[in-house]
Image 1: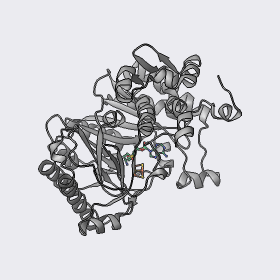
Image 2: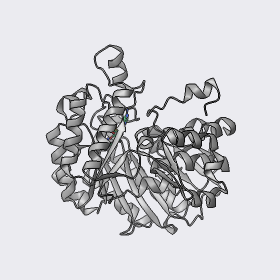
Image 3: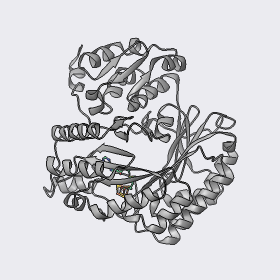
Length: 426
Ligand SMILES: C[S@@+](CC[C@H](N)C(=O)[O-])C[C@H]1O[C@@H](n2cnc3c(N)ncnc32)[C@H](O)[C@@H]1O
Ligand code: SF4
């Protein structure tokens, strides 16, 4: 039941506001490193590349364009040194390694030599095995036959490509250098490496209409890639889109239209047997599930390497310094480039396991109880009752599961369940 004006105001079942992490960065402070070494649980590693071929008009990430080869090489040297230093300081080689994720920016902008150097550093310093999932994010314009060959040699498990749209007019409005033809060719080259391929689409890009969106979705399915991710286009003030929207140069679909786009995508994915394992990634025949994101959403540690990268070790959230020059300077001076952190208390961990756990569509109630000593439906009773009544979730004795309506609305379920906890405890 909605009790107050504040609650009523909140309860607009919108799909915007993607949650990247919990707690929010504004609560992080300087970090004492005590207690981070000696943990023996499974580990994941995130490696950040800030460089990109261009600045896309919608993109809010902190990225670097137009870098010279020598600058990128210096950054990669620093990445490798950070891997060595972190592995030694925190005994990382002692831990089973579930996944390595090269994210960005655009990691496929790195040269073959850069990628080989990082891989050989990982092989030397941490516990990479045949079971370790290795994902590399990329942009089609940066994938060449030679790059694809190197990715094959590195035994990359998944190439995750930002495609965004397969309609040339829409791609152009985002100021990307890709075209549909380039994207399709990059997908083909990536598949030949033996890796599985994920493509990101963005729903609600500038200029998108039901027809252009349906076209993109149909083309994406036609490629037969192993997984398709759909992000709702979020508008940020630091983007070109924001300026262009204010000066009426572009129009963006509104939230209701975007919701219809997502519904259309979900219907088409279902027909082609792409099954959701998170509320935004759909895998072919319910296979090829990703390891990295689910591992960290279920609470496994992930150590983050690179400028601005953030990770989690035990109860600590850690973020590196943002600026590339400062990052390299700190590494060269022999310091880990850690900028700030946050030690999570038990309520932080409960909230995190709800908001990030709900990204995986289902929360197993028994394992939630084992981890936190809390009966989740009883703990968030008002919200769970409301979400059940409104058709966003279904609760059984063993699990709390999003319905199709819940999946369509993204982070809404996780946010609603934790809203009163956040108000009370943070
Ligand atoms: C690091 S990029 C992926 C690789 C590569 N840089 C590219 O764009 O092709 C990660 C993804 O973030 C998504 N993204 C970027 N800006 C966004 C925004 N404003 N709203 C929603 N998703 C966004 C895009 O789908 C993009 O593929
Ligand atoms: S969308 Fe990808 S390529 Fe474009 S600026 Fe953002 S990170 Fe770089």
